[in-house]
Amino acid sequence: MDDAQLKQFVDTMWDDSVVPSLIDYIRIPNKSPAFDKDWVAHGHMDAAVALMANWARAHLARIPGATLEVVQLPNRTPVIFIEIPGQGNEPVLLYGHLDKQPEFTGWQDGLGPWTPVMRGDKLYGRGGADDGYAIYGALTAILALHDQNIPHARCVILIEACEESGSYDLPFYVDHLAARIGQPGLVVCLDSGCGDYDRLWLTTSLRGVATATLTVRVLTEGVHSGDASGIVPSSFRIARELLSRFENPATGEILPEGLYVEIPPSRLAQAKAAAAILGQAVHSKFPWAGGTRPMAADPAELILNRTWRPQLAIVGAEGLPAPANAGNVLLPSTMLKLSLRLPPTLHGDAIGMMRRALTDNPPYGAVIEFEADRFVSTGWNAPDLAPWLEDSVARAGRAAFGHEPAYMGEGGSIPFMGMLGEKFPKTQFLITGVLGPGSNAHGPNEFLHVPYAKRISESVARVLADHLRQ
Image (tube, rainbow, N blue to C red; front, side, top):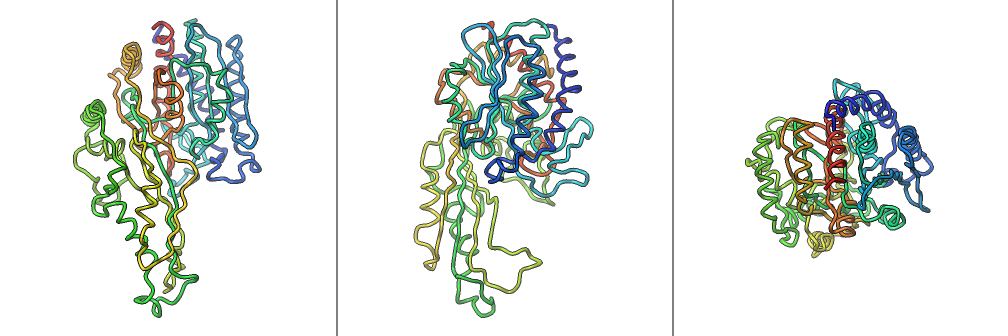
C-alpha cells in the first residue's frame, strides 16, 4: 500500500464529498424513535436515509457488483444495507447508525443541534460524530483500497436507525438479513470513543444500561405548603430516601452487590495503561463548574468507574415546576427518570434489583410506581484480539497517527455488539470511534473532529487489507 496515496485519497474524499454531505445530514432533526414518537409522520428519518443512500450509491458506482438497499420491515425503522463483493471466505461487517439524540440545551452562541458549523477542524451539530460519519468513514476506507487495486474480503455495511433507542428493531434485521450477511470474520464498529486525538483507540468493553421511571405520589393535588408541611411528607424527600437505598449519597457507589462483576486482570492492566497515557485528561476534558472535583483522584480508578462499575444518573424529572413558576405548594408527586449503567459482563436482573430497592416498604405508605423501559441493553466484553489483528492494528495506528494504539473500555452502550457477540462468538472485533475529549455526544456543542475521522478511515482501510491476507 502506498501510504501517501492512501492519505491523499482519504483527505480529498472527506474534504470534497464527506463533509458537505455530513453538513446536510446535521440539518435533519432525525431523532431516534424514543424521542420522536411521530417519526414516521415527520419524515426526518426517511430524509436522512435518502441523503446517505444517495451519497453512497453515487460512490458505489465505482465498484463493480456493489449494491445498496434500504430495507424496512413492517412497523420498524429502516436500515441501509450495502454489499460490496470481495475475496476469501470470511465477510467483514461494518456497522453504524444514523438516528440522533434529542436537542438538549446549552449550545454556544452560533451553534445548535440542527445548525452545522465548521470551526477550524471541528464540525459542530447533532449526530455528526454520533454516529452519522460511520457510513462515510467505512465506505471511504473501502474505496481507498479500490483506488490502489488492493483486494479485500466481501464487505457488508449495515446502518441502522434505532440505536439511540436501544436498537430494539435491530435483532429483526439481523435475522432477516442473516443469509446475506453470512458469518463475519471481522466486525468493524465506528460508533465508539477515543481517549485523545493523537492515536488510534480500540474499545475493549462497553457497559450496558437499564432505564426506568420512579414516581412517588403523596397527594392527588398540590396543597398550600404552610398548611401541609409537617403533616404531609414531601414526595421529593421520599424519592431521595428511596434512592439512598440504592446508591450511597456520599460516594455514588451502587449498593446492591449483585450489580458488580469481577473485573478481568487484562482490563485492569489496560485501564492503568490508558491512565498513564491520559493522566489528568481522564477528567479535565469535562466542563467542570467552579471547584467541582472528580469522584476519585486516581485516573485509573476513574476509568474503571466509567467502564466496569455500575453507576446511576438521574437524567430527567417531572413534578417540579420551574423556579420562576414555583409557589409555596407542597407537590403531589415527584417523577425521576433513572439511567443505570451496567458492568460489561453483568447477567443479573438489574431491573429487578432496582425495583426491589426502590419500591419495597415505601416510607409513610406513599404510592410508589416503578416503570422499567422495555429494553435493557446488556454490556459487552471483547474477545482477545487474534495475533493478526493485534499486529494489524499496531501497524495501522503507527502509520496513521505516528503513535502506538491504545486500548480502553467505554462507558456507553452499543447494543449491536452484545447481539453480535452472542451470534458470532468466534468473530474478531475492531471497535473504535471519534467521540473524544470535548466532542460531547448527546449534550450541547457536539462536534466531529474531522482530521481524526480521516485517520480512522485510513486505519480501517489498512486493517481490511490485512484481514484478507491473514
